[in-house]
Length: 611
Image 1 (cartoon, rainbow, N blue to C red):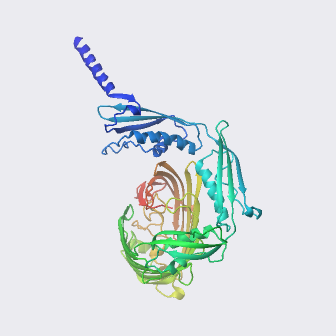
Image 2: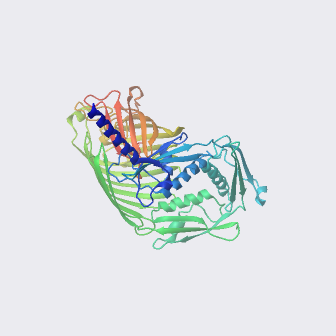
Image 3: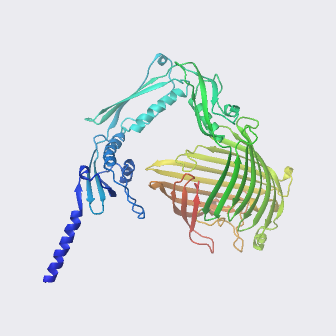
């Protein structure tokens, strides 16, 4: 019994020492001569915004729990004091005035660690009670341009500073788009903290309607200024339009000859009716080498090496030499691009290359010469027309494939035109949240064009993106393919048949594993294809996003036989992480009826948006 009491006394003494080593203090009590480290940061009282959102606001950071190998960040009292001011300002910018922030610091004197507890007392939201827009000045007598039906600010909604400022820019943009190059705007907000209401005033001073004047180019050294001027979508004497200024700048940047481009009205005194324009550019190297590395579950390790000259022989011509390798494709190609070919919106492209494709059904070797014209009808509609001239040779075709399809042409010349249209209103090429993409392509070979192969093929695909709220995007896709041989069935090459299944198709199936298979299990493809996807996408944490999907599709061996009554389905989920080169994505799909001998699940890993 005496021994037990001694143990308890010793334990209590140890507990007392541990307790004394960690104590709650204020900032002023920290020893300024000592280096302190952040142990952890915790928030409480916050309901409108998550701890992660508040953590992004402050400069003081804690070490992430999963980076145990890293040293803990330093705790600076001055920086933390500024953080305590940033948080109420953040709430105020979001419309929550009167928010209070208090803190507790628990200090471990022995380890030199500071544990931060931040208590947030969230204020009541301030709603917008009144919005007034006034057009003033001598030009106010002239009928003003039509305002948008909705502004970023709306009566009854929370008064957020970003919406308040953006609404001013929207109003300013309306006048800039209708010739008022010298428009000025003012904004004022009166916030009543007793009633929690805000009254917003905007004043617009239009100035005179103006037209474009001459454009001066500055900053060119080796590039002919004419290359810059021909990209302008406006002409001197046209009514001023900010949209044309923006489009012109984008076209100049697309030349890829400049690291920076500034296009704006030149500085002048007063408000002249003729607005001189100024383009200031900063040239970059016209020669570059690009190396790309990647990995995917279908093509496994892949690499690409490209040398490009962005102003070959002047006039903005581009020449590139490309080499690509993966477990599926080996490519060597030379590409030449001539901008402003025949018209300002058309560019000519010539591709000369050699490919080897290793598929489960065949190995294809092809040498090609493919000229093409690309035309930009508008900012959303583009089209192309080209010609395919290539020599194809097929090897490693299994006997079971020949028995299933009949006679197969293993080599010959493919000659014929190709053309297509693309309508694209998606707001982001990597992670779209709204808009649509519709494409239509027609290929034909043989007949009057000669060659060993004779067929026609049509492919149409539509993608739709809808922001349904709660940070969730509904994405859908539908693809239809139809093709047929002209004359004998063997005139349609095996490599031009439709295949389904895989990373960019129906994800519950392996590559090309959906549809007819030979007795040895090789994909046979078909002459008609129908496939689509329904997907919900939502952020999980910071740059990490999640998705659930339902894919469907089927291939028919007969032409013009859309396999609606024989669709196969798969469902699954995926995660993606946003990177500068596109989302890094992992999908797991489960087919409802997997092919005999295939797994009941498929994993697809890729870089880039699926659709």
